[in-house]
Amino acid sequence: MNTENKAFTMSPFMTEWLAGGQPSNQLPISAVCNSHCLFCSNHLNPFPVAGGFFRDLEDIKLQLCAMGAHDDPIRMSDSLPGRISEGEALLHPRLFEILDLVRRKFFYNTLCFTTNASMLDAAFLKRLSVYRPIEINVSLHSTDPALWARIFGQDVRKAEIAISSLPLIRGHNMDLVGTIVPLPKICGWEDIERTYGYFSSQGARSMILYWPGHTKRTRPQVMADLECPLAEFTDFAERMKSAHRMLLIPHPDMISPLGVRVETIVAKTLKGNPKNRGAAYRRVVWLSSAAAFCRLESLVKEKTAEAPNLHQVFPVENGTYGGNIMAAGLLMVEDFIRTGKEVLEQWPDTELFLVPREPFDSLLRDLQGTPAHAIADDLGGPVWLVDPHGGIDPLVSPRLATRRGSAHALLRKVMQRFNRAQSEDEEMEAGLDLVACFPIKTTHGELDRAALREAMRAGRELMGAFSPSAQRFEMLDSEHALCIETWPIKNSARQLNRWTRLVRRESGWLIESMSEGLTEG
View 1 (cartoon, rainbow, N blue to C red):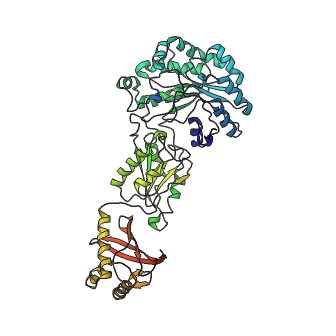
View 2 (view 1 turned 30 degrees about the horizontal axis):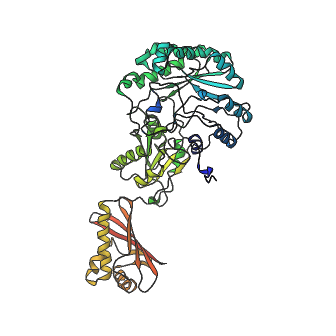
């Protein structure tokens, strides 16, 4: 008898679809590729990724049943970047069975494929066109067969098939989209421009340009082939926008205005600060991807010029991938923690960090599965994930920031002296000298020095020990702290909980107020 519970076994594709928030436009089916591109991201990840397999037909059925009906395009080549190898959907050995399944549920949705086009001969395209409407995004970085073969790591015969596929795609009434990774060191800008023009002449609806990416795992000999100054990439993109009447999407886009609703986010920082009695967070730090930093910094300055609190933007370098990776979606929790700690060294009074939502899935994990709340845990204070539309996800974090270090040692000494005064008459006056000013606010009202002295003596009859059974400290801000103690009660299961607020003065830490209450043990 098989006792395996299938509810706990899911394919990587299904796991990623669920973690991605069940996007209605994604149905990836392959983690297998037939090329060895110079810039391939599948071999440059600093952590293991799933790959080398096709999606099972039953698993595809399972997702199709879970997908709601809609009219949007369905992308069958896209996976969440970094966790599953990007593959060629058109290589799937049961491709046409899968398309039959998809069309049983989604009759009219455009089916989208991204491909190197090395298998798109006339016969294949004729059979594929039966399932129209279809959009084919062809990755083609040179129309020179020898250069194509060098870039893709395939033979020239495959290059000729890929280059010849563009007019065939349009001839079978399928939509064409083009993708180019400019490699000027290999092809030269003139060849790249000819390739762009070829897409335009064949009726491509839109173009995508990717700046050649490299990581700390890229081999030195490949690095030279991938060299492409960002300024030249941006200039080329702008020239192509002017020369051709096609939508162009460059990655990264260093020029277009950010669509971030900064004013909406700023308004939400003006309340809810536990260190400021629920009022504004007084110093707010935005952690930005390197790609968005300059534009976000300018936008935040503009939108917060008259704000009652201080906002600053800091760039986060991708230390996980290294190289020239600058997109927000590939940043890791450890990158935000590292930058946040650097900020706290410079601005220790930072009260709130704002982190972009893009790097995290629907479970708020980065690509390595590290939960976003680890940022708040390590930085010891409030962290919000913010999306471009102004939405926020406050991460679980201590309402009161805990900072361990020399401050706690000094606070502990002050409370030891004060508690000793409560049990020994000869220490009483030294303990009372630790009060910042009289009268002091307590649970029993405002007490002058004499009244507090009598209250401390009366407390001896109540306490079952000369020191608390538990004691911890919370830093409220750089000038205020809270001591939280639990005291045993004589001949009773009840306990006394005491909260002592301390303030930092030139002479050291002093006691500002006290409150206490009894609880059952």
